[in-house]
Image 1 (cartoon, rainbow, N blue to C red):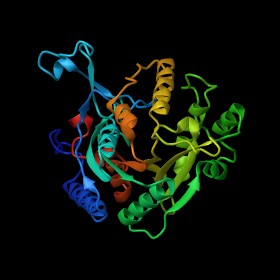
Image 2: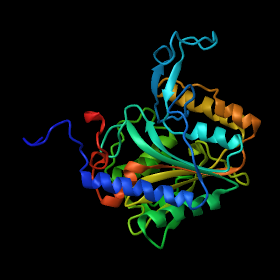
Image 3: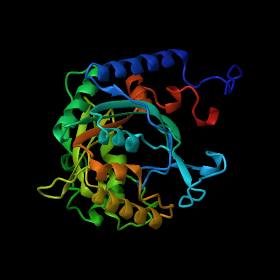
Image 4: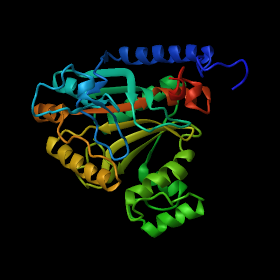
Length: 334
C-alpha cells in the first residue's frame, strides 16, 4: 500500500465504477427491450442450491427472527445467504411469470481470489418456452450486445476437450486424464478421490481447456456430461448429455445456462447424490427439501435460464486482472 493509499478507499477507480454503472444500465436495457420483467427475490432464505462445490454462508435463525422459530419442526434452523437467486426465481415462474431477470448480490463461502469474492454481483434470467437451442441463442445475443461483436461460436464439451487436450472426456480412462495433466504440468495432489471422473474433468476443464476458449471471439460450450447436469435436463434420447451451456471469453467462464430440469423427483435424487458427495468430501450436507421442490411439484413450466457474474464480465470487458479492480470494496476492505 502506497503512502497515499488508505484502506477506506475503493480498490476500483472511480472511472471503472462509472463503467460498471454504464454496463448495468446496458444490461437492463437489453432485457427490458425484450419485455423481461426485472424482479427482486430474498437474499436470505431457508432454501439453498445443493451443489458439490458451492458452499453457502449460513445464518442462524435466532439471529434473524426474534425469539427463533415458532415452528417446532424447524428448531433453531439455518438461513442461507443465497449463492444464486435461482430457487426463488423459479418459484415466480411456477406462479405465472414468463420472462424475468434479476441483478443482485450473491454469496459463496470461502471463494476469494483473483476472480472470486465471497460477495459478488449476479445477473440471472429465465424465459418460459425456451429449449436448449433458444437458451443458447439468447445468451449469444447477449454476448454480441455486450461485447459489440458479430460472432459467437458454439462447440460441444466433447469437441472442446478433443481440440485442446486430444482425448474424449466421455470415454477416456483415468490414466489418460492423469497423463494429460502430467503433460500439461497440472498439479493433481489435491484430489480427495483420484478415481472420481468428475474431479479429473473439472480439473482438466479449468486448467487446460478453459484458457483456450473464447480467445478469438466468445464461445458457448454445450452438451455437458450428465454427471455435471446440476439443474439441467438430461437429453432424453441418449442420456449421455446434459442440456447445459456455458459462455467463455478470453479463457474466462462468464455464464452458466440450463434447459431447466422440471422433474421434482429427479431433483430430489440429485440433491441426495450431491449430499453424498459433499459428505465424502468432508463438507456438510445441505437441505434436501425446498420451496423450489414444492413449486416443481405444483408445475414448473418448460424454460431455459442463465446465471452470469457481473464482476467477471466487467473484468473481461476492461481487461482487468483482479476482481478487486472492478468492485469498490472486496472482502479485505468490506
